[in-house]
Length: 95
Image (cartoon, rainbow, N blue to C red; front, side, top):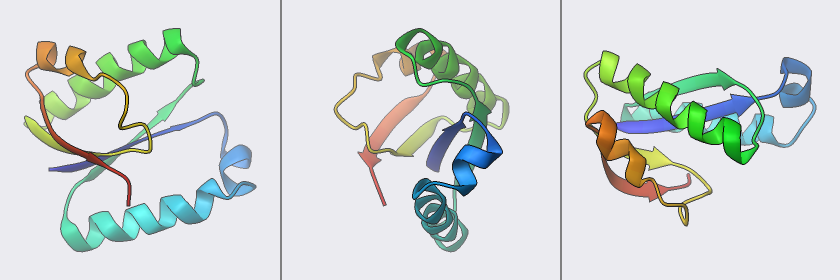
């Protein structure tokens, strides 16, 4: 399943940045190719990021998603902790 996590500090921040057009492109991709987008509120600090991984993983498991193709610009990160939630990361790419 194609998966995109989107962490936003505020609606205003999203609407006034170049991230908005990228997000629209990703939503179009998911609409055409299938997949889910998980919106999460929060900061992008390392402590918050690990907490968000856990929350996001639980959301995906709740919906029965086990194998994910992660849409991310951060493909160089180690997502090994996802296996603890029963998730298998197949591909990490950015569209």
